[in-house]
Each structure stands twice: as C-alpha cells, then as structure tokens.
Length: 429
Image (cartoon, rainbow, N blue to C red; front, side):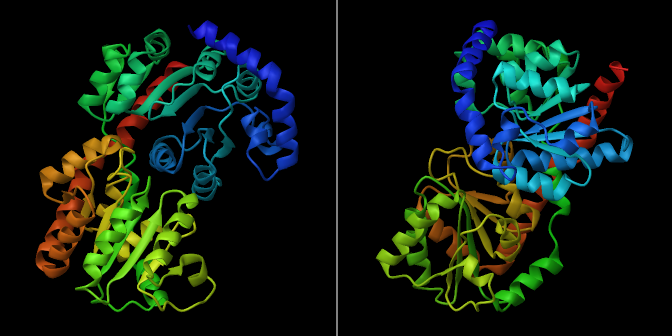
C-alpha cells in the first residue's frame, strides 16, 4: 500500500506541480509554499546536512520542540537541528523562539518528488516526528537516504485510533520502521502497538508538551498587561480560550447568566481560529453586548468595555495569567479539546467540556488532583464560575492543585526523550 500511495501521489504531483509552482511564485519569498514544495531557502541550504530533523505540526508541537531543543543544548549543544512546521502560526512561533538556534522550514507536501528534493539537501541523521505525524513518502525517503526515524511524544486519540485501524497496511510498516517510539502514556503505547509498533521499541516517557509550560509564566509581563488594560486586582476575570465549532453560543449564554450578578466582570473571548471572530462579533451585536477588539487595545486605546474579543494570534497564554477562572475550549463540541495545562501553569482553576480526547492524560491528572472541572454546557459553566468567583479560598486551592497536576505530568520528560534521541544518533556514528 505504501508503494501504491507513492505512485498515486507522484502522479498527482506531475499533474498539479505547474499550478503549485505558480502559486508559490505569486506568494513570494514571504510565504510558505516554496518550502512546502521542497525548496530550501539559501541560508538553510548553506547549512548542509543536519544531525536532527524535528517535525512539528503547529503551536502545540512547537512547544514540544522548544522543550527538546533546550534539553538537547544541555547535553549536546553542537548538534545541527532542523525544525519543520506545518501551520503558519506554528511557523511564526518556531521562528520567534528557536530561529536563532535552529534552521526553520515549512513542512514539505508529501509528494515523492518534493520530499526527495528536500531530503537530498538536508540528509538528516535522525528524523523525529512529534505526536504521530505519519507521512509515508517523507518517512520512507529519509530511511532510503540512510537516516533513522524516531517518534516522539507519540499519541493516538481514540477518534484517530479507529481511523488508523482501517489503514493498517500503511501504518504497520511505517511504525515498524521506527528505531524508538516515545509514547506519552500507557494508553497511547497500547494503541501504537495495536497499529503495528514493535513493543520492544516503545517507551512511555510522558508528554514533553507540558514541560515547557512550567517556566513560561512571567508575573512581571502579566502585571504589565493588567496595568495596560486598567484592571484592578479584585476584578473578576473569565478567559474563554481556544473557542471552536460554535462554542461561543454556550459561552455567551454563560456570560449573560454571570453578568446579572458580577456586573464588573471582565470577559475575554479568544477563538482558536481568527475566522471565528466575525461569528462572535455577530452574536455580540445581535445580543446588544458592548465589546472591544484586542487589536484596538493594541493601538493605545483604553479599555472601556467588559467584553474583549481577541482578534489576533498570541495573547492567550498571558491572558490565562490574568484570569480568575479559565475555560479551555474545543471541548463543549467534539473537537478533542485544547491544552488544558496552559491555565494550570499560572495556578488558575481550569474548566472544560466533555470532549477532551486530545488531552485525556491532562484531564485525568487534573481531575485526580482536583484542579479541573468538567461542564456540559453554558449553564453548567456559569454555575461553576459563579462558585469560584464567590469562594476565593476554594479558587486558590484549585489553582494550586492544577499547577501541581502540571508538575506531575512534566517532570523530566524532555530529558528522557533527549536521552533516547542521543542514543539513536550515537548509533548512526
């Protein structure tokens, strides 16, 4: 099946490559399409063969890459590291945080011609994909050029597992070829084994995505943000982050219930994708709720309203630091949830919906520690937030327990995965 996939994608490239190349030229050097087609920038090409190639899909996986690079630099700072990223938001984050240390490139489309072009230039000794990015052509090409492959922070959600089971003719040989597989928990290790990963190459190391969160909170930056927005210390703040799939309807219902009691509450609405901003604004206008856009506040406007719609990428993590209580979205609808541990890093109580498949180990740990609460809808959310607004001692205790849950999940994970990477690299010497 992998051979058939290679032939089919190769034929597709032959048909569509003129159009893709034209699109790349129209986009120009500031875009990502040239890299997606396997063309390296001059400075990356000049760097020559790489010791390690890390593939990160988006912002969450870039956080894993950050933790790994920092751990690698404590042990082997001389290693040449290439990081490829799929999404524009992830690419911007990687360039900002790791661009001075690593070569950063867009992830190539999985056409055989494209990945051969790039792999011939990069020639990684080890290619490590983060969180089960199984692209057959690239993985197979790296192996043909003599590179080892490693799966780091491996996880398979329950929803993805059922899909992968239908593709065993592809997943089994791909997983069987990995030198080492680092799974984030026993549950995910068992799923990977069922899909064809050899048990003797699977190690349960925990989730490196959470390790970098421990040191990210910056109280001085948070206080500067509070002062800039003119928010007094006792003011109650609810941050609804990473909203997806129409969740704003339930979130605004919760707002209506809370506003009747907490008239001075400040409410931040942060969609996961900026295309949802117009939908949120439309609902606020329909309800007659006054609001301001974050982009307006960034151009020296004063905050005058209690509802802020965040219409730019980037502020969410620091806003969790301001929050009295945080709701993490993508969880009231079947989207798998977003990173529950970001507010926990600040010692903030975490509320989420029932759909947290992508962060099940985080939810289990939060609930076992007592730092997280699940709600089913806007009414439940309003009731939970109301109780936490009302009881500061309870709120502070839940925040401490949430932070402790994060510490439980993230202790030394990046160092463990780095040890495994270095062992595989040494076997290449």
